[in-house]
Image 1 (tube, rainbow, N blue to C red):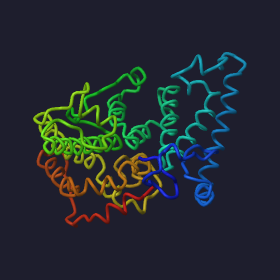
Image 2 (image 1 turned 120 degrees about the vertical axis):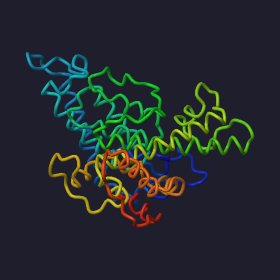
Image 3 (image 1 turned 90 degrees about the horizontal axis):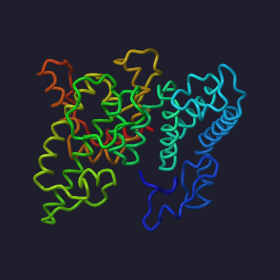
Image 4 (image 1 turned 30 degrees about the horizontal axis):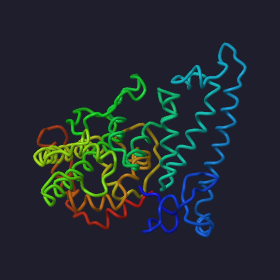
Length: 352
């Protein structure tokens, strides 16, 4: 996700330092007042909502910090109840306002908004370890959008909310996929990571072969750079090829596992309309897809999906993955024979 003007997008010769944030929400960037004014009719509603709930957060924070202590209320829950915030009833209006800020910022297709949403979400999890407000699922997708693949995998691998706060660091992103994952949301994030790593390793192999020595492909993020060159030493060509073989084997396994958890997920990600409101708790229902898709869609946007379609042949990959699982006797599903076209991917990718 690049830092670019909300109106004219990425442009050569325009550095992020030359842009300025919306003064009210701090979530989007503009190259000048003219474009900010032109975009205001589109941006106004979401901007006002962010400010409204940030103001409410500030009000509730003041109340919490200056509360009169009694048997139910501590003097300052920010100092005494970190990790157990939701258990103090007087903190709940603050947490609810914080959730609204996070969800609204997450709707912004801009780097500052994504960074702010992630920071608020991490703060929410630090205060409320049990995640009573249901915000954790937004964390890995914000990280993926920011190119923080290792951090997203650590968040996924952390898993057990009863463990110390974010005690997993530097988990092996190439480790085998767990046999049993019940949340389709997290397995699709894992799929995204495996696909991205496979693509990065392939590019590194090409760069290595073209240069006839170890080198990193152009444009890798800090997270991918650390993966491709652990401890500052670029992996050998032999090691890269072994990694690529492993990751290209794991990717269809992840696709198939997500499909077995909810057979509607991949079709909805490619063509998300219409989606119905979630009317129950059935994790296999089509209705459940509305919540999952809204939280998970942005990392699958074009041009990444278009590139992966060409590089990994998504439909063929999914078919092979599902067939492999069927042969193993784990799940029986049917994959349609209709040919997938790049235009369909682009249509689905622009859902948010």
